[in-house]
Length: 600
Image (cartoon, rainbow, N blue to C red; front, side, top):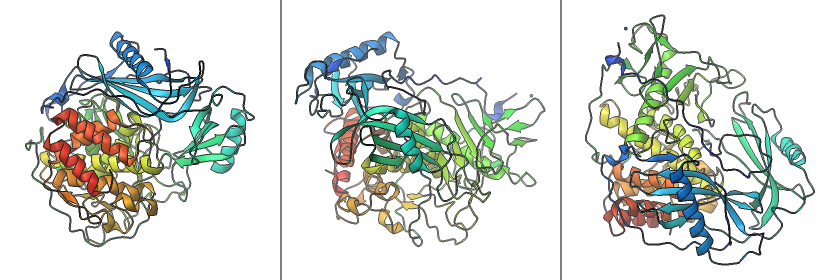
């Protein structure tokens, strides 16, 4: 799936990345109510010292705290947090001392204040003025504004790798990557000088080249946002990976699922508001928020949530572009006689609305960027050859849904698929998990986790929605009636492809297959039970609401682009400690679950 930040050509990454403010659309009622700072050098070492962090319980209403959210890097509050972080890092690193002028440096990327009153400063690592690819540290300030903890590690980088002359230019690396890409691009390529740790464990002077085609791609290739790390002296390809995948993976199809019944919801059921008269393909009757147009018809545009939620028609093209709306004369969507093309759009729109609400109500974040980012979806996206696309994906800016081929899949617009794919945008805006290796497996897993959360959340409001521990089951192989799915979080190995235990990671490193490790850890935290491989487990779970808050906080607050499974365990333990206390039952359940899946 997608992890990287929005691509812009960069010569040398000296400046922090500042997210653009979301444009706020006029607020509209549901349709039933509508009327006609500079970085500082510090020594590079191994790990950071940490101070004891007081536990603060998160109340049910804390997620809506108006004081939480991203801070502008130019604000006085952010500047103060950045300076305290830099002062702390400059005085508390351990390990190999760097000589003057060659010290590691950091550049502030994001400052975020959470619902507990803590402030988190995400910092990109640089070396001699050059970005260190995918390495970050995060400082965590308590309510009193003191640095209580730091996430991340800094290993020693040889002098000169960031500043010494290299044999290749950015254009040379770009040309080498283009040969590997072997196809046209639909976004401006980028080639920037970086320092990167290769698969050999050594640091190299390199170029990071990004080449993308997320629209007019060949079916055999699929959408691509390829990343190439090219040695700046030898031209050798150090690493390459695609930061975009799709919901489908070519695994063996399992039989009917005997999934464990979900636990009783830990939040009360809330009746749906408004007039429930819109008919979906997968979720029964719902109430969509729409907009009345000048001609009297209604469009799938929701102005009541942040910057908006809008669903457009891709018109069966491979390039999802334009603003062709779906319209309805009487604002009763999906009724008999309606245009058949609107059916999948109704589900996509509902899925985006529920995902927005889940992120805000459960995870305590205002959309993907924390500032009400607009959620845009396109349905009826085809392959380049005009055939139906059996896929759905987030391309870094918007959602793209295929119609399925009617045999392997129906329209891929189910609640859990919508939540899964949009969650890739959340990961991209926060932890930025690289879609490769262990961090790639975690990237996929956290989308499955949030996708399951969206389905669970909607089930509290809509009795037609059935929550379970399967991924994509409603759209997958609809004709056979077996109830099979793409993945099974309670029993990952059931799909004949995924692994559920870290001991088997070397056998399955593809990101969809390795996602089963963290998927099962999350399931065990939530429901309790045993891991099928180890026989170890959790004696009773903590329920979906608490487990989502813990894993969601871990993703947005304690994880970095290169987070490993072991570091994910640490991140979730820290998140649970923040929310429920170091000696809480919740923290112990999280530890037990990761131990059960072989992550220590």
